[in-house]
Image 1: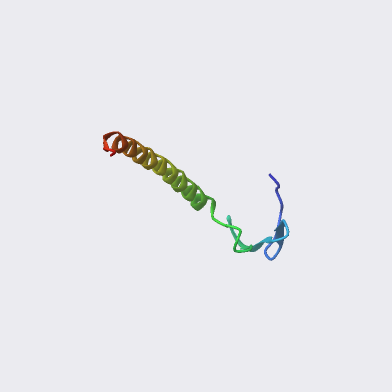
Image 2: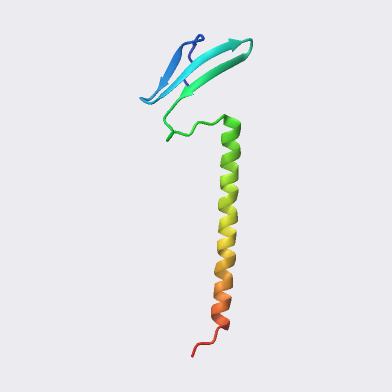
Length: 83
């Protein structure tokens, strides 16, 4: 982890396209502004973790649904009469 000291109004560059600027410091609260292209997702850590968990749950649910559909199609294939 890179640790830097910045004052209000000072920035940090991440790559060529992302700039993080310290906007305000009040006690133990720091306000930052993040300038990034729309193609770069920027989330608070707690929101990112919730999105990630929801996406993982969706994959598990999709896998279970796909397995159930496959099983149903296999059963239907065994019971179907073919001319």
